[in-house]
Length: 325
Image 1: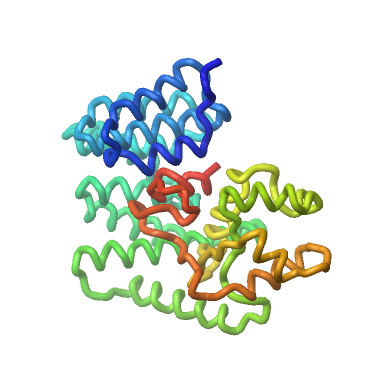
Image 2: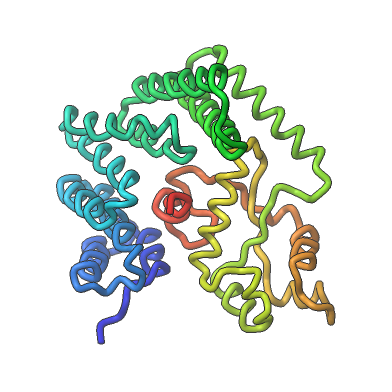
């Protein structure tokens, strides 16, 4: 029976990319698994196609990359915004400006409603539309701040989400303006104040550093074998573990959290730390606090840098999309 294509293998292929001696073979493996229904988790079908599209674009074949991005949209119609943004960016970089801008413009309202929608901005910047990206970020901030001033939030959750979007948009806008070499303006000053306030708040916390305990793949599997009771604390699969961490980081960042990172645990290290004591959530927190800060991996990595989870794939093709699942 043909082998199933797992999320781990997709990550591995993404990390190899055009560095592989035969990128075309990697694309064929991904697309072949999709064609034959051999993706272990059907929810990863669109992800597999987008990784293949990225390899093709890096190889200079944007036309075929566009075909796969379009197919990824069809494979995940309920969660297609990220794939549509990738498609819009590819259209721009293929010189089909009207079509590309139409695709991204249709996604533009998400900047005012979703804390994760800055992938739309990423595609504009990658397509040398940095000034348009700045215009959209500024307009989104204007709209959200106006709503905050003039409308009552429906719930505490809605208020928190608005705060998350304001923080994320100001930071992204600040970065774009730095890329353009522009001087500070009012929103840049706001970005600085929000970052300083979040760092100050974190320094005042009594419940530990702004790091999360992360278990690499082999350690995660061994952890649940050695301490089965931890199945009540952790999800059943490593993919869910890293997806949960990515979502927690996005939420913390949106609420003003700074200096975020992961610290990797080991089964041997936890066993030595706990001794004969039972392993519970309090023990896990104490173990995380005990780990050397020099071993912290900062979050978030750059969009085109290696992912924090250690898969070897680029962040934009690995854990970044997991926050949108």
